[in-house]
Each structure stands twice: as C-alpha cells, then as structure tokens.
Length: 583
Image (cartoon, rainbow, N blue to C red; front, side):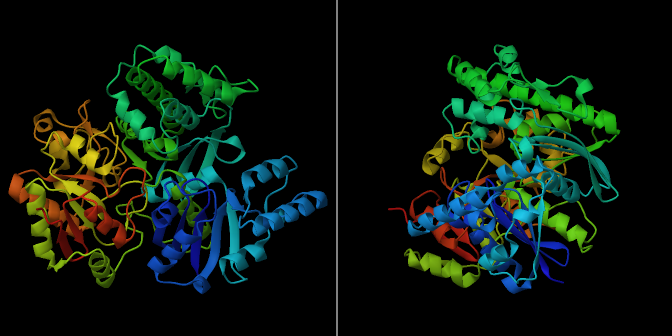
C-alpha cells in the first residue's frame, strides 16, 4: 500500500508517515532545524527525517494530508487576475532577494468561505507535488485544524466511544474550541466557539507575554509561578477576561469575557490583562489566572459530559499542555478515564490529518490505547561513535547490562547522566530516550541543574517511575493511567513520599510523572529498576535533554556538545559511555 504523509505547517510544524494504516514515523520540525517552535512554513526537513525513519522514499507516498496553514505563496492562485499578477511580481522580487513569501491559507479560506467555496480550486496541486518531489498522481487533501486535533485525540485514546474536547489559541475561521463525540469510528462535532476575546489559549498567551515571557513557549513558567501565589486576591479581575458562557449557549460559543462583542475584543482584552499583571505581584497574578482558566474549562467539560452522557473524555489542543488543568479534569467525579493526546500543540496536527486520510482509504488497523510515541529519528552505533570521537572523547562500548549498571551507579552517586537511546520521542516531553537523568533525593538539584542548563524554571523536574510502583507514590494514578506514560498530567504526591523525593515535588505537593513500562521501553525500565536496587526508590529525575531555549537534542552531536559544555557529567549514547575528566 502507498504510504500516507501528514504535514503540519502551522506553529510547531511537523511531519508523519503512515504505512499500511499504522503510524511509522513522526518528527517535529524544531528538533531537526534546531530552531525552537520552528513553523509557519512547510516542514521539509522534518519530512525528510520522517521518511527516513519510516524506511521509505518520496516515491512510496500515495497521499498527503494537509491543513489550511502556511505554504509558499506560489502553490496558490489569487482570487483575481490583478492580484495574481501582483503576487507573481512580488514572488519574483523575493526570489532575487533569496526569500520565499509564505501565504497563510486560513486568510484565503475565510474569503472564499464567505462565497460558499472551498480551498481546492485555488490550490496548485501539480506545482505542490513537484516542489516536494512527490509522484504527480499522489492524492492531496486538506483538513480542518480542530478536526485534526479531535481525530488525534479520539483515535489514539483507544476508547470505543467518548466525549471529545479541543481548545487552543485559534484555528481556522477563528475557531478555538470544539465539542463533540467519538463513536463507532466516527467524529461528530456538536458545537464550537469563535467569539473574539474569549479564547482560553489567547488568554494564557497574553498573560505569558505580560509577565515578560515568550508566548507559545513559556506558558509552563506561568503555571509554575501559580503555585506560589494566592488566587483569591485577583480572581474576580481575571474572570472578567475568561469564563464559561451561560449553559443556554450550547452548542454555540461556550466561552465568554467582558470583551466579547467589541470590535477591538482581542486587543482590548490583551491590554486589560497586561495592565492587571503588571500592577500586581506576578505570583498572585499567575495563581488567579490559572484558577480562572481551570474553572472555565472544567465547567465547559462538565457540560459536555452531562449533555452527551459520556464518562470518558479525549482532549487535544495547546491549552492541554497545562498539566494542572488536566489533573482537574481527571478528578471529575463523573469521569472514568481521561486521555490527552501527547503532542497537543499544532505539532500533532500532522498525525490527526493523516489519520483522516488513512481512514478514508480504509487502511487503518483497529486502534488501541496509545502507549508509546517513540516515532522519531534514531541513529546507529557508527554515528554515535563518530560524534564522540569528533569531540575528542574516548568512548567505552558496553554491553546493555553494563551500560544500565554504570548509569544507575552514576545517578545514585549524584551525577547527571545524558541518556540518548533508540528513536526520538514525538511531542514536547522527554520520555526516556532523549533525557537528562539524576537522583530525585537532592532538594538542591532544581537550583544547581537549572544553572548548568541556563534555565529559569519555576516547576520542579519530573519523575520517571516504574509503572508497577506509580500507585504507591501518586494519588489518582488509576484514573490518570492513559496520560501518565506521556507526562501530560500532574498528580498529588502521597505525603509519605514527599520528603523522600523532594527534587520532583512542586511546592503544592504535586509532580508530573511519567510511568515507564517494561514492555514499551525495556532499556529505560531496566535503568530505573537498577537505580531502585541501589536506593530503594523506583523513580529517577527526568528532564528534557536540552539547554534553555533550544529544542530537545536530535543528533548525536547535540548530545556530545552537552557533555563537552559540562551540562551533564556522563553520557550514554547508544551503547557508548563517556564522561568528562575532572582534574
């Protein structure tokens, strides 16, 4: 069967490949280009890596799944002859300057949708396929942004039926939220929200910017600060900027604010939030902002569950990177199971779009609850050895048991180990294949390791815990079981464990654990088990293998550079072990 290629060219671009109905590879653009949040253009570099990881070439691709996002302007006709001539002149000038103009196809979609038209007549399909080096008979389909969010969540939940909720900053046609159901292999959208000035994602982005952080990148810092403040002081003020709409609005706009209905709704709310944040202690502002955010989304989720009668919920979209929000949802008494798609930002849209196309071709195998996202690039032993040698390190090749033992000993001794194994994870979290590991017992590690990594984080590092021991340490591990393998949720740490593992417990008594299965990642499981044998603790501290403002490492050279720069003490790069020589 020809392979299906999915491409997401919006923020956090990515590419994925399906072969015979199964996901064979998925790669984020930023990992390959080494530019954080690389997007708003075709992810050609990620496409190359995904094809290679899947073991196929361009000639094996039989279908391409896309969305209405950013593309080179040359692949679309303009709506009039005058605009077409103007566009061609601009393109010619930019080519001479070595630039390529990008078109936001969502803007074109809005204009043609008003006339009851779709995007296909304006798309230069032949030029697009030729530009990507694909066969001229390759099928191409466009899919809706929030529909792809919903499909990725629903399909990979493994649920036979469930409620489906998507929320982000904004997608096509100003939609930022959809509510629906999944049953008998079909998605049904029951409603959506598109009121300007009411998007929960844009609300959080505005607060992130007002605090001096980078929106769409540093929202986690706001979340970390929230635990240090008092939400009560500013709750009513922030609620002016976001709340659930009256229940009678269903299935229409489900979110509201004081700014909805104004011509300048977006800018007015942004200015209000900026003034509110700057006039108050940022810890209290973050706490109130987070509380309002959680309350509004919880109310919308509960309303969806009540109206559909569902007791399972699958969610996707950028706001669900907020792990405390996800903890609130999992704790709902009417909810039995929650699933958060692990690549919840626009990165995951390539997968959702490709699933649509695969299902249309009736190629998809029966879904099971997702347990692994090790879909990225991997590197052979030769590449690992070459990277070490090029930086002047003399690596020691070890058998697997010896490598595990050496790494566990180093962690137990208080050293920081770079762990670069197998295929790269897809999504924002390091899940034990591109990780930095340390002992969880050091209550100073947050300060010392962040200094080495040039990070300014307010959240503690996360624990990777043996799946069999999760319920001993974390509350509500059962209801969160579908989220825990991917670090998409926080849990309360049981009181008797908090003093034992202070490096991975936040000031509010929560942690963001990853459960590690022996079946899914046996090498990583063996490492944690070896550390347990030394310490009696069935988890290790796990943080992403990167320094501040850089993507998680992709190439062996990136990992070796971290060792050379003293970001880590030891490196397990494939079967090779290397250390910095201390004098």
